[in-house]
Length: 115
Length: 115
Image (cartoon, rainbow over all chains, first blue to last red; front, side):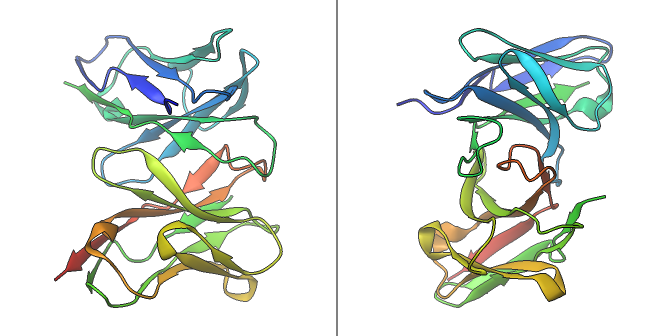
């Protein structure tokens, strides 16, 4: 049973460009959350998708957007990249967004470097 | 606003010695608390969680944590550290008390294990 898979593993972009990161949740999971982890910091919650809608959002600008597909996979899009967007982007999945007994399963992340 | 503080950036422990990693949180109500571990190049793995009930929580890999409301703390402990425990450890609080899908993480503590 595959866990959470993310692609690509590494990505290099230049300032002003746009990037799309992809995530496939663990089998049986329908909720996907995205986190940004800057170097030397803990992960920061970006947003969560459930039933193809954004359900919760952290303190990130509108340049960060997402999408969830009918098969529960998700994309994270970042427009007008800034140097400060360089980070490890983690995807996490769970069986539902509100069950207190569920836990998050994290992927290994996509390392984004903005030059 | 909710926040998590991990006072120790880096800790070195001898193999076989005991370990305690500190975590303090700021949250108005009874929080949902978590400890995660991250090995290099890997995603986050849940060690244990506290939602309610017994304040001493047992987790995987021989870890335990104690919730102390009076001290706003949720310290992680292990009686005997193994070299494979060397990793980054993150304490987190659930911002919405909804199953830990929108987590606020501390900045992490790096654990090194010496022989």
